[in-house]
Image 1: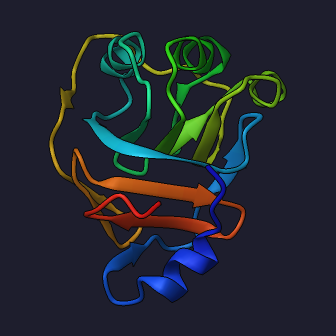
Image 2: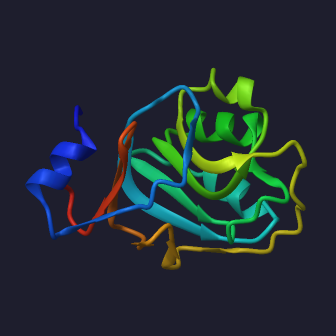
Length: 159
């Protein structure tokens, strides 16, 4: 499906949310969209791994990592798992690592930045809860559209 977030904003102005421009692109796929699934965790990526290991066909994983820049929650291993399980993309209020390798993996990724330090793995986190960051409320089951111009969230499927 082809879309442009600028066109979605023009057509659905007033009924979509637009994320603040704080994210950098990673992953091989520039434009991606899908139903939102959420994880809320802090400096621990085990729940992210568990979620990406499930079928993600038609979904985007939105991870609220509290904006932490201390460690990476997603690297080439987790991105690869997500790509193989059919996830369209990952939006991460936190950091990635393995940037060069991420650029070869067929998944869309947006994150605050990159840092080489890996996260903890204690299984602390929750799945399927509303999360808010970058001026947007991300609710499981809503829809997110992401391209080079930005990130748009809608209660309804737009295309």
